[in-house]
Structure formats: C-alpha cells, structure tokens
Amino acid sequence: MQQSQYKDIQRALTTLVGSKSVTANAANATIKGVEVEARFEPTPFLELTGYYSYIKPKFKSFIVPDNGLYRDAGDYTQSKFSGVSAHSGGATLRMHEDLPDDNGTLSASVDYYGQSGTYLQDNNWDAVTQTHLAAEFVPGYWVLGANIAWQNVMGKPFDASFNVRNLANKRYITGGVDGSTSRIGTLAYFIGEPRMFTFNLTYRF
Image: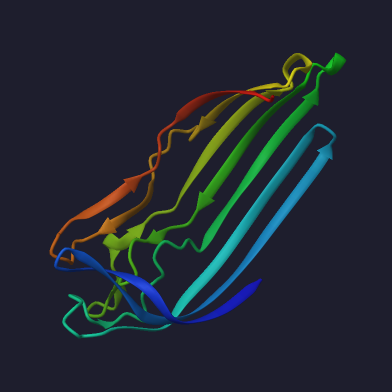
C-alpha cells in the first residue's frame, strides 16, 4: 500500500501554440494505491500466479491559467488522471513436465490481463455540465494469451515455443489523442493488436 503527495505536476494539455503542444506545471495531487501478488503450486507440475493493482490518483488542485496559451483555461480539479486504470491485474496458469532421458521440458500456459477504463487527457472535466467528457473515456478491456514451449530440445541448448496473443481476438482501445477541442478538431484512438501467432526458436551458444 502506498500514498504519495505531488506538487507542480507536469500534465500535457490538448491545445496548440502555433504547431506545438503545451505542457504545464498545473497540478497538485494525491496518489493512493495497493498491489497484491500471489503464487500457488498445488502440484509439482502445475502453478498459478496472479497480481492485482488498485490506484486512485486525485487532483487536489488543477488550474489551467488564462494567459493566452491555453484554449481551455479554467479549473479542472475534478478531472480524472489520464492514462491511469483504477483496476488492473493478470493471472497465468502454467503446466510443465520434464521429459525422460534429459530430453528437455515441455510446458503450456494460458495468461489473462484486464484493466478498467481510462481517460485520454487530463482536462476531461466539463465545468458547464459538471460531468466528465464522455469522448475522453476509453473502456476497460481484457485479453488472453497462450504459450506452448519445449526447452532444451532433445537435451540440446535449443528451445522452441509457439505463442498466441489476444487469443479471443478482442477489439479494444489502448489509448488515443483528443484534439477535438483544439484547432486540429480530431479524435484518434489507438487500437490494440489483433490475434497474433508467433513461433520462436532459440539456440544458446
């Protein structure tokens, strides 16, 4: 468990001065959080690992100065931290077995990762409606992965593995850039990678 106090945090604001973005020492904040990790081995060949993280950042003061540089000057103390998921975590289930006659080790695993939603930029508070801007919110997502590996193939310094990322082929957003309130007038999202297969061979000299 942790708690930190910050003053004069540099936060990027989505606005333009000529052709450049602006970063300001505009905020004071308190950040609280907790992390938990666990490992469980019910049998010599089966193991389960997992972790969970909770983080709660909160602006104590976030005033965007009205000095001609910022398009959206005002009080954004009620804004949410951008790029921060309150909840995130993952788990891996792995099975492994040593082959007879020192022919290596076979293993298979499935892993999970998930996180709650985030905001694209820090000035996501609408002072008029007293709500957070819906366009700034990126929903949470989860992904699965799988791996099959053979280490020390036939007793040699040679490894082979087959991996699948985003096993369920989920469509999800990892982030983005909101220029809808700037002179650009655009909103772009970054899409997570689709289902991908990889095959790896490693030889140790």
